[in-house]
Amino acid sequence: MIVAIDGPAASGKGTLGKRVAAHYGLPHLDTGLLYRAVARDALTQGVDLDDAEAAAKVASALDVATLGDPALRTVGAGESASRVARHPAVRTVLLAYQRSFAYGPEGAVLDGRDIGTVICPDADVKLFVSASPEVRALRRFLELTGRGVAVSEASVLADIRARDERDSTRGAAPLVRAPDAALLDTTNLDIDAAFRAAIDLIEAAM
Ligand code: C5P
Image (tube, rainbow, N blue to C red; front, side):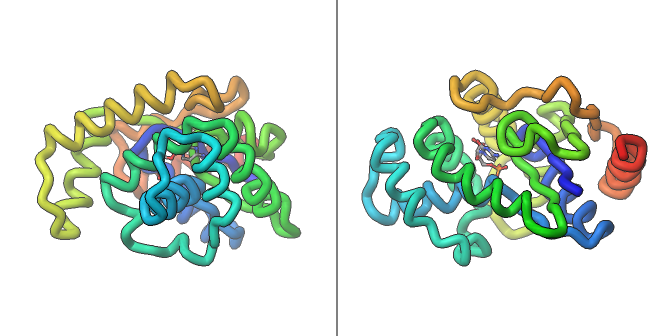
């Protein structure tokens, strides 16, 4: 079974992906980490994030064993990730790894921006997770301050709006809901309620 979960920044898709995967005993891939890691490696090597060809070369050399790096979870890493994610050449390099992960023997749960549209258009279940920008900003703000990161809620909201804009308006694999994806709006749901709603949608789609 392949479950594709897409949605904007801080919509809760990552947490949902993890819980859905654990529930069905499936491997889980947070695909945002791939773009975050490419941006990290590019910056470490002094590569310009806007240089598509150089960024694609960095993507080809990506070591997926480094995806657990806590430095990938920062606000800056997300911002840099969305810059390298605009390049079709980078996306093409990362597509192969995502497909091989998805089409493994047991299936998988993948979350990102283009899983239901580009990576696994024939996924068994597609969810599009969304929430209002204000609610997403508040969640991200609480998560960051809970980890001791000093940020303002206003700056988190501005970052989320900027990333939404960049991810939805880019030419290559923009963030859009696949026509056959079930919409899960988590604006008024806590994580447990969102998880139950996700399982209901998955069971209904199977
Ligand atoms: O989901 P996360 O916030 O970790 O993603 C970081 C950035 O990586 C996103 O803002 C987006 O630009 C890019 N991304 C993407 N396609 C995916 C996953 C992430 O373009 N499947």
